[in-house]
Length: 407
Image (cartoon, rainbow, N blue to C red; front, side, top):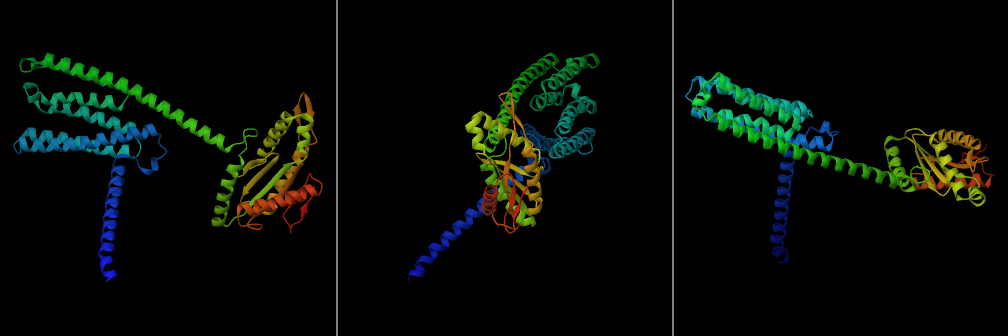
């Protein structure tokens, strides 16, 4: 009896979950469809954010212009008699514009914003002036198509630099001023009023373009500064402030990632832990400033002996770690011997005096031979480092059973 009472409730909950999932799926599909329409192709994700923003706006405008021209084509078919010259001429003109708009949309989708804008503005200019050439009735009283001369001015004020907007407006107004010298258009149209309307609209478009461009440039500048600041903060969070090597936090994150990658690719990872011998003596005898200089000089030397794929870190105090993806135990041991040899010859200047006699002890381990995790490998390398200290310092020791590799 209890089951029969609970079953409808369970079914209702399942039904609600299915409806919710279906609604979410439809919303995600709609978002994906809209993004595919207005955003550049996936292969152009390297575009700057400002370029992506302009490309998105251009895609929306091109889609709107396509819809608008299709509607105009329908109006032409409805309002003009079949077979009439006006219907044929306007149909040809509008079809050419639709083809250009379609190509511009496709080109913009592949990341070529400038070419797409040029095609859009060309079509916007082609519309009114093409109708003037094809249809003599425009200058005999039906001047409505000429009002579209403002569209390229408005579009350029949104999409391009103010100088281009000024150039387009100047061209449009200049041609409009010349028309009365060739045709008696002023007898059928209040041409002066029309010119004033075009002129004022162009001026407002240019001013709007200048203001919006300044705002967009400021937004882009602020965005660039923010990206730089974030990048700098990220860099500071993963770098040691004295040596400029990676810090322990970064090493912990990267080591586990490298171990996982090595497991997938079935490759080794070599690790060495280095400790500057008698570092405390430098601090106690010469001062902490001398100790910092020594750390910096050692970091420079270490950086000169790493590959691009290697990760050199300051582990803490006078200890350093070098992670070598793809390096076997033997390769890591050989590299450690080279570093140990160069440290013996290292010199640094402090208080106008050359300081030398610097040595380093190094413990070497590797994945997967001596551990399956980063923590295990570090522990085994640290054990080898302890053995190197016990055996007299200034030497390289690998994890047993390889035994010590003395100088």
